[in-house]
Image (cartoon, rainbow, N blue to C red; front, side, top):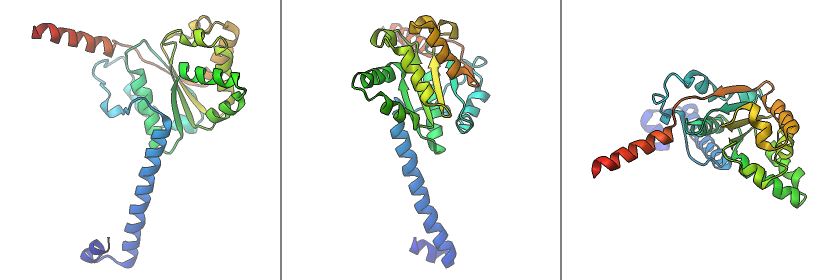
Length: 233
């Protein structure tokens, strides 16, 4: 830095500004990297590597890119992403979550099955209030794969109650729920229609609803792989 300052003829003030900016940038990058690690994303996803052309016309790119600005987190709004399997919901939500980390928000990514297993275990050892406080400290909690299968109901008979407690503990914080089942099926899915509706009301009230339609990326890739395998024979 000194050699560069001398070669560029920097003033003392310019040199100090450059030195401080370099340190500040390094600290910022370390903070971002920490928040991303702490978020526990399954994959590192960005909207830049999302295939917008595959389902062009069925995914609202403008809305998705607006969500990546994380203004809904600042407004403490919930986000519900609804769509059939394979259309890119997890990619999009992890990209939004990662960008929120870059913007300074604390994020936790998990699945509904994992969070219910965690809360059920804490219920057994009487640490549930503490675990709920842990989830409540994040600016954004992402619950992916809600309705992906029926593991929640088989592993946790108190699924609806625990999810309600979680959302209730996160009042005035943003929660993103990613699901492949329509709202009217939540009661049947969780096995407790009244409590499921209370949970639905809590999370949907004032929330942003993002509906993702289109063809399955996974089915398309599987078909391509199968075609390539047949053509190579």
